[in-house]
Amino acid sequence: MDRSSAEQDLGTTESPEEAPGSAAGAALGAAAGSVSAAEIRSWLVEHLASLLDIPEREVSVTSTFDEYGLDSAAAVAMTGELARWLRVDLDANLASEHRTIEAVALHLAGKPRPQR
Image (cartoon, rainbow, N blue to C red):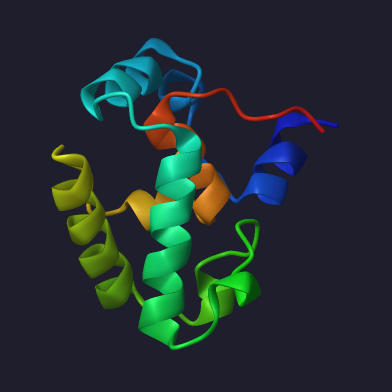
């Protein structure tokens, strides 16, 4: 599968320099203080479920934020809350650049995206 197809599957659009497995991704993962992708994923699932008033089990980590109807203001607010939880500065456009919970979690943990 080519890179653009894999990006669409995971909802990512970053350049190779920003890829989670890159030095920048690894630095961000280290800055997040050894919070795992699973912990970030769990926080995002809980947050989105609470925001949408749905059970956590109904939140798919591979569905895009757009599919949940998250507008840009809500996405920026979510990113701000996530930044406070992680105690790091995050780009306000995080959810638009990494469009799924899985993509955000892998990016912030500095993990490479799985190959498909």
